[in-house]
Length: 329
Ligand SMILES: O=C(O)CCC(=O)C(=O)O
Image 1 (cartoon, rainbow, N blue to C red):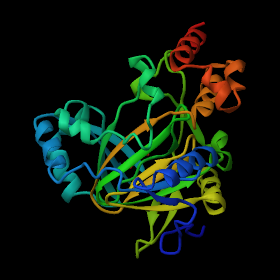
Image 2: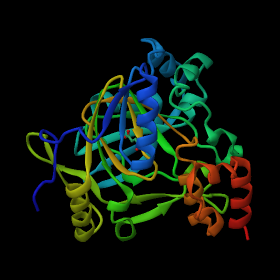
Image 3: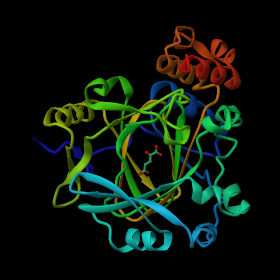
Image 4: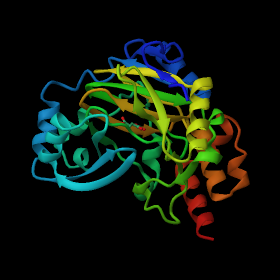
């Protein structure tokens, strides 16, 4: 099978690039991104993250332990290690064939107030996050990600129809996006409720995840990749979807990537990286959130919500209450 993800010739033309300093263009681009599943790259978003932010974060966590995700020969496992040892692995011992990744919510949650404040999503992007009005057990938290060279996320779509955001503090990454309807989700995915939401009957939404790794095999010059993992048919179906509908985005240090609701994506870390990732819901994607929850809990009234006005009738409190009651029936 031919390698399909060719970095050198892929263009970022399907992803808009905007600056936080141009608010009117930014608002239009955010709205388009949420409704049309087009990823967005925002510059100048976290200018308040200063040069000491990372060292302050690391100092506050130096005596803690973290979960390390290890990917070796298409197999992912995890182990718990002292944070500083794990950082050493990320800086010096990670490569394409044996890579390490840390994705942690606790690091930021336990860091000093000025570190947390600097990592907050600017109001120009989301003035009021409706996810903050959900009951605490349903609220996703902001993560810090430390990736080693060659590490990659799974190929997945996030739960709930939220908008994802991912700011790159250090390093270089490539993203592959595939619009939801162009991805063979029923064939190759399992549904995964977010771990933060207990994963039991209190979960009111779920993401999609596949065992296929779009970045499994790297060409000798490092510019193209072949998918592997799952069955051969699954890998082929994913490759086809990427070939026909994939959008490649290169993310450099200081850029914020916006992940459209329910859009499939996988991320490849070319170097050691540090990133902050979170999620939000506002009027632009609240109808998508309502329909997502309605489908997951089996509530036609929610599933059929159309437009921002109708969605606004479902406050986050009402949505959570009704959906949790329905899942517990
Ligand atoms: O940066 C990564 O490795 C994964 C990011 C991601 O999947 C996300 O922010 O949703």
